[in-house]
Image (cartoon, rainbow, N blue to C red; front, top):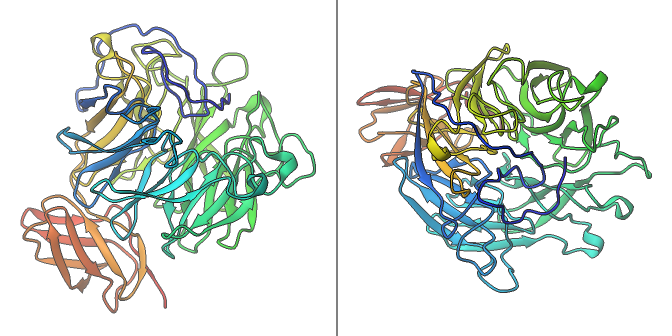
Length: 502
């Protein structure tokens, strides 16, 4: 299920996550969309402005959405772009990678995270970079700077910013174990100025096959309130199926790694294999998807699953794709928990309009496992609405979801919005902090706001612009919901704000 090269794809070929291969079949065209859901194609890429987006978008402080494409652009080798798009669909290319013949700035970018300072941070297959909202890019670190690439190589996931201000990420290859470098990988920490520390190198076992502690981590990490970091390795572990198995792991900020779960622990991998990224739910558990595995599918491969796992490692399979007609197959990304408490995601294949290998879906699933297919791609003639959504979704503060497809009728991909009737809310750019810590609140139509409270405790604030409020954690604040009183009503934060003790 792995592939190391990410080349230019023919116009009809769906694009999977860079190192995941999915099969291709022609789509059968028919109309489908549930009445309560409205999908709007905001933009179709044309190659010169980017191609085949495969990483989740992020909403910036301006209210606009930012993202990357791994292909296309005007660079020498067309190795991707960074772009900005308004909620109404106006796209601006901020940066073209590989603008110089030797590509010192890297190529094939993997998504963004906005730092507390307002800049965006991300990775390419060979670098870590910072880019200002205006488009000025700075390369912070180049992988394989150490002998035998002990610092790792080939990053395939976006970064996260930790509570300490540093960024955390993974590489899919190399590391400090030179005998096990192919599909090994690392977990690393990097400061905003570019000092990189390798926290863990996978494949620490002596020649075991597969790597018992996991290998090839391809998804973004998530940090919990106590500072521990959770993630997935797409391969390795104590079980193996067709090159995949995978693990869920926990790693401390100091680099101590604990394997919490080994996929394919059940006969025929009915518990899933090749996991994507995690999201921590409001209940404290983690939720995610596996690309393959489960009891349905061809032979023993399965069409993928949705799972819940406790911080201690107890896994529950919530849904097996292929359980009903048109529910989608092969999810290639993780989930997002929306303001209504349900989780939303995409499948790269399947749906009501295509064969099992086909066009993909958007779905919602309750924490208890009830799945609803919200949209099946290729609902329009010639798939102008897109197909193969390899990236996950982001819920913007206006309540709508935004995402991308890696291909469409012309093969270059789209940006779309999906309205399911959810109302606006506010998001704190950091979800934890001590009393006195600066906090940015993002929202919609915040001009004229009259109060900001942290779990009921009033805070001083400044409306920076209609989409952004600057505030600090007030004395006496306790963990809970952040609320902003606006002329149109009171908006609540989508997740509780954790007030850290000094």
